[in-house]
Length: 77
Image (tube, rainbow, N blue to C red; front, side, top):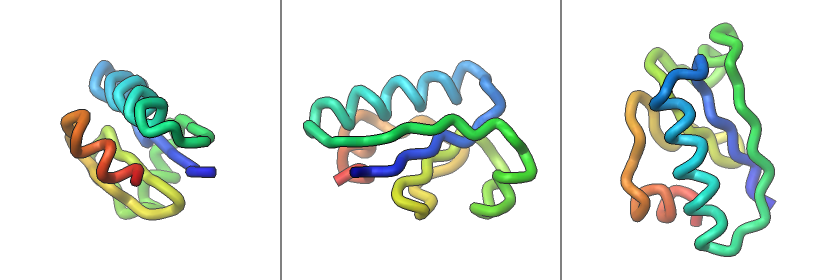
């Protein structure tokens, strides 16, 4: 099971990253658990200075932008 974290303050881009990531995971048929992290102190644990950010299985995949659907699928595979 993929452990996915969306790091963000709840802004429009953060919400878009979450919905786009969930859609990509569903297209890939993945079993996943998604967690929204809004505590800015936790962002530093991943070295994130700009949001939104995507963490998959403990590894930072992207920060500061919402990747394309294809890019998200690669990050989740």
